[in-house]
Length: 489
Image (tube, rainbow, N blue to C red; front, side, top):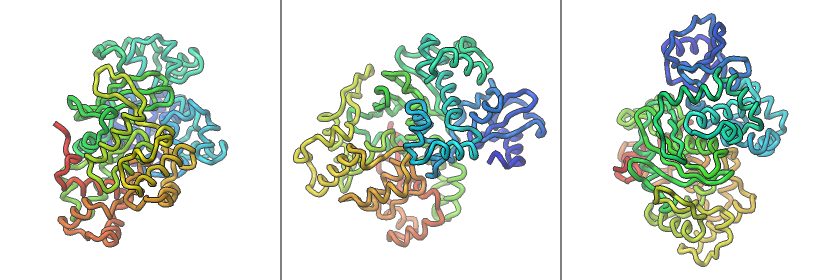
């Protein structure tokens, strides 16, 4: 979008928050870059230039605005609605792969050469993987500076910087303030938090309907791993350097996030995975406008706009849970999962009580005795085949997964039909166009609304909803009185 100058100028002049994260405005006279909704008086059009990423602005020598804090914009929805090389690379960079494995590790995960990855990122985003990771590192540093009392040296290494001098220089260059000045400014507007916890605000594009989002997560929560308490969804997180516990609370203009991490180097990854689970980078206006074109869907959208797709923080975990939930009730699926967690999950200490384990790894599940599984023999075979392939690496499920290729791999496993594969694609891999025409709830809703109720006819009708059929599923599910559709009280 950043190449459409007139459209960008109109968005900046109207301070339209819907475009935050889509592009960034750099002001030639002040050398500052802003989000489109920046509250200051808009600059003259001839003084504006536009970039597709904060990293591109920083590479061009612009500093982040102190008023609108463009580095805290919601992420571009492009990276969650596409499965091409650039989108997969951006999801991996957000997951901290460049900091942990370098650019060669990023390229290896994508199956391309380092040169090809760098060339495509530069062409579309105006910045290579190192610059994009550096911008993310700076934002992580800012969060730690403003929300903790840690020494600056500890923050530098936790944020991923290799040297304190590099940390100081980057913070000054990006934010036009020294790290100590950032902390002083933050202390004037913040309130003390519980020691050991980080409190953050996760932004999103309005509107956001929390009912099905948090309702689904709470209704399917696995005891010991997840819970709903005091208006917040809490769960344990398995992270690259350790583990964490997060509490996520819906607010009118943001999601309140409280994190406890065993290793602060996992902060960027934890934030990225929570945003992905809650689908916070979606563009609800574009999605709802597309679905409203169907006159039978329009009343559902108008009644409760802004529905998101509840996703996951761990793709392998979700695939296992999808198999456990085949042809059983939500309560039965939770019971099966809870038994596995108690027997094979890694214990964690929750200072606030309630959460006890991390969900078992595929390696731990592959080592269990299949006869101990209280499920039919055919589903036991499905379960063991899945966890064995996840454990030995022959099946990869992650943010870098190619959706079409992964679908084909899953369909080749015993016991994996279209419903299981598409629910994994929708909630595990994040495919916004995944569709469940054979789902009983979808067929019942379609019949009540006057839509075709047979899978083939409904799929044909749903072609007009593309590429947002996963969101149509949420609106159709919402016609039922199942607990997944209601915010817990």
